Image (cartoon, rainbow, N blue to C red; front, side, top):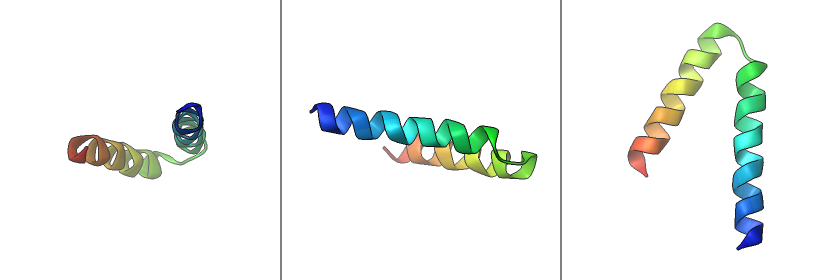
Length: 41
């Protein structure tokens, strides 16, 4: 259970890191992807 939590937190961290290191167009695409993933789950 802790392992899953760690992986989830790691994914969130990578997402945030990618977001702040990307350009504006990439950010729009990123937001779209996040919304799409959230909508699917």
